[in-house]
Structure formats: C-alpha cells, structure tokens
Image 1: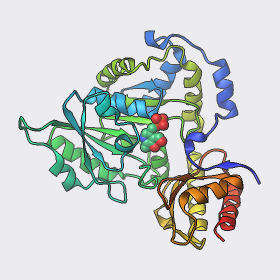
Image 2: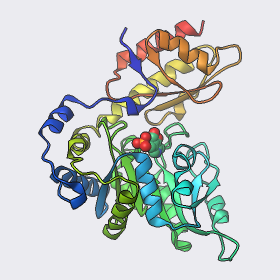
Image 3: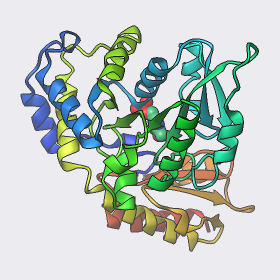
Image 4: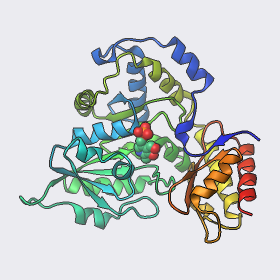
Amino acid sequence: MQFMDLRSDTVTLPTPAMREAIANAELGDDVYGEDPTINRLEAMAAERVGKESALFVASGTMGNLVSVLTHCGRGEEIIVGGHAHIFLYEAGSVSAVGGIHSRQVPNQPDATLDLAQIEAAIRPENDHFPRTKLICLENTHNRCGGACLTLDYVRQVRALADKYNLKIHLDGARVFNAAVALGVDVRQLTHDVDSLSFCLSKGLSAPVGSLVCGPADFIREARRARKLLGGGMREGGVIAAAGVVALEHMVDRLAEDHVNARRLAEGLADTPGITLDPSQVQTNIVYFDLEDGAPDAAEFCGRIDERGVKMGPTGTHRIRAVTHYGIEADHIEQALAVVAQVMV
Ligand SMILES: Cc1ncc(COP(=O)(O)O)c(C=O)c1O
C-alpha cells in the first residue's frame, strides 16, 4: 500500500524533467525584464491562451488580485459567484487590499451564474452605488466539483458584459482541465474574456507560479500591481523553468486525472454510507457526502489517514478528493479499499 495524498492537486511534486530544467535555467533580473526563462514562459503562456501578453506571478491568488486591481479602482464593484475562489478563499483581498466591493450572485450547481441574476446585479449610475466594473468567472469551478463552463455560456456572459461596458476576468486556475474535458482548444474558452489567470502549480505539477494573461496594455498595468504587492520576480526563472516544462508536457495528461476521478467517484458511489452522483464529475475534483450513521468528515479523514490515504474535509459531512500527477489507476483501487474498510 502506497501513501497517497488526494487532498488537492496542489500537492503535486515537480517531475524529473522539471528538476533538470530548474537546475539548468538561464536567469536574469525579471524586474528589469531580463530573466530569459520568465520571458519565454510568459510568451508561451500568452500564445497558448490566445492573448497578447502574460505576466508570471507567485500564485493563483496573486494572479486574481493583480487582475482585479488592474481592472478596478477603489469603490468600484465586481460581480462574482457566491462559491467563487476569489470570494471564499482569498482572504477578502480585493476589498482588503484594493478597496473593491464584491457583489455575489449564487453559483448554479453547474458553476454558471444565472444571466438574469448577473444583469440584475449590475448597478445603474447613481451616487449611492458603487460602479460595477467586472464580472469574474471560474473555470473549472473548484467548489462546484470541478465543473466546466462551456464556450456557449462564456459567449453569453460576453454579450451581457458588452451591453453594459463591463470587463470579464476568468479565474482559470484549472482552465486546462476544462479544455481537456470539453475537448476544445483552451483559446476557445479564453477568447471571450478580457483577462485570465491560470496556475502551473496544480494539475500541471510545477512547484510554484501562475500566469496572468490579457491585452498588452492590461499586462503593462498588471506588472505595476504585481510590484505593489511585492511580487517582482528577480531571478524567478528557477521556478519559471518548471512552468515551461508544465506547458510543454503536462497538459494532455490531465485526461488521465479525469478518468481516475470518474473511477474514484463510481467506487465511492457504490460504498454504503456515501452519497455522490458520479455523472457530475467532469474533471479531477470529486466531492461526496457522508450519510447519517456514517463517521463525520473529520473522523472519516482521520481514519483513512491512519491507513495512508489523505482526503480533505470541506464541511461536517462533506469531503473533497482530487486526482493528479502521481496518482495512478491502481492507487484509486487502493483508496477505495481503504474507504470500504473505514465505512464498515
Ligand atoms: C479556482 C482556484 N482559483 C485560485 C486558486 C488559488 O491558487 P493559489 O493556491 O496558487 O493561490 C485556487 C487554489 O486552489 C483555486 O482552486
């Protein structure tokens, strides 16, 4: 039995090719724009997602904050899903750092925001109100079980944004998972948003880093916001080198994580005491609920941990498991055997 950590895809370790690239990376001072490896990564990222320019940042959280700070000023407002990472898990940074107000619209189970509810949340011009500037989407959607927003949906949000002269930012921490799951070029998913951030350090397995991507003038301003947050990168090519390998070699294999997640979901759904609909699992994230009479989430996670399997409690009776590089099909069968043992 091998130890396995299914708490998140952020636990992935760099591949041997990444470690080699890190050791051999050409370096310079990125605050002077002189780190050749970061410059290469930024050019690759922009090309890959079909935007003019890109900026390397420390994390997905920094990528989202830099983007929102670049789109909005103090006292302005973003429209964001009630289950969005930006709203729930980023320490309230858009308000704490940027003085930017956030207006939540409920996420539907498929991760969309209802278009009529977005429209109703857009503020009319009036001295009493903050000015709506930005709509934030998330694809795939973490709290909505890794659900993918479709091209058609994003296009509809674009039409609404254009009607009110608003911008769209995509938290695309796992946008490559969405592209692989939907079988589309990632550019199709990013075409209709003004800016996006995506993470190298999740399913793509790089140790650190995210990219903010958008028009050249937007990225010039975003560099300033990154500096304000203390995110100037200096010889950050040591970590960007792993990001280059991630973009070159780690995108297509995300399909394996999706197959493993689906198998995990099917096995869990067959386990007495667990509620889960495997047909809802589209990518690498599996949420499930422990029924009355079963151990609660903390106890369940403690019991499987003692047997070498980690999953994350996300509520009193709710658990999240995430598949990623390093987790193979036979690990999933072993994890299911452990779950069966602790549920008796
Ligand atoms: C959807 C989403 N956005 C943003 C982030 C933030 O990324 P980081 O942990 O690199 O700050 C995460 C992290 O899990 C995420 O799931």
